[in-house]
Image (cartoon, rainbow, N blue to C red; front, side, top):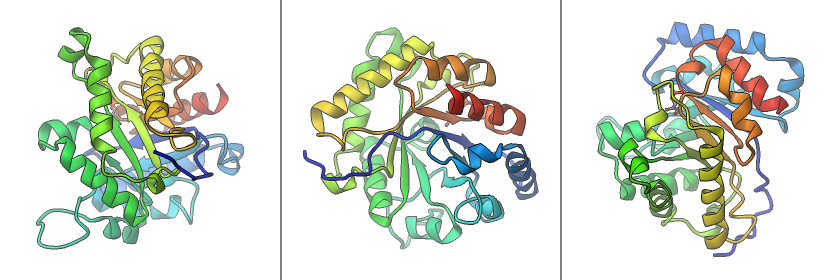
Amino acid sequence: MESNDKTTTRQRWVVGNWKQHLLRAEADTLGRELIAGLSPELIDRDDSVRIGIAPTFVALESTRPWTRPAGPLWLFAQNVAAQESGAFTGEVGPAMLLDAGAGGAIIGHSERRKHYSEDDGLIASKVRGALDAGLRVILCVGEPLEVRQAGDHESHVISQLSAALSHLTPEHFTDRLLLAYEPVWAIGTGVAATPADAAAMHRRIRGWMEEHYSRPGADRSILYGGSVKPGNAGELIAAGDIDGFLVGGASLRAESFLSIIQSAATE
Ligand code: 13P
């Protein structure tokens, strides 16, 4: 597959996935604390590291003052419907997210795969629909513990990736498509992948992308997620091949999230 896109240079990102946490007033407070704690150089130098937050749907509006275009943070939703609109009770479509101020969405998180039975087909439709609508996408892939123990983690992740990208055409491979490797066993457990293991998977993903999609289409930003903390962010980034983080628990406190951002910006 060929891609003519010229804007696919890898970009460093740190995105906080707030999951089902924080009432609107709490989201508002955390947003204020983040802005107050961000150094002006980081805010001005978007090319150094881009900082994103992914609140619940109902807190998207309240974080707007700190998110683009008014503020420096990039706003993501945690999920998006595969359909544009219609009789789909409980769903929120891509245009509604854009309307609420979100510029992107996380798709395929393992919690959605596990608790809401999202399968590869649905995820592929969501990725396509979101990109078509103009959203940025963070596509999550990652293996459960038993798959890693069996030594099948690379094939598992590549199979998820291949399925999720299967509805795309070369035009979709712009800098709006980001990948995140989140091993399921590392999420919320306090046990992150070692820098060597994480970097090895990122290289595998990048290698597979290069085999299947010509540059620069293959040149995605690939984030790591799973128990990223101030204490391990620096060594993960230093391992190379990791373009930033998708952070859960540690993004709920300004101090720890800012420390992770600083590590991603300086390494
Ligand atoms: P934790 O950082 O809490 O392990 O969560 C990671 C995650 O799921 C981010 O999407």
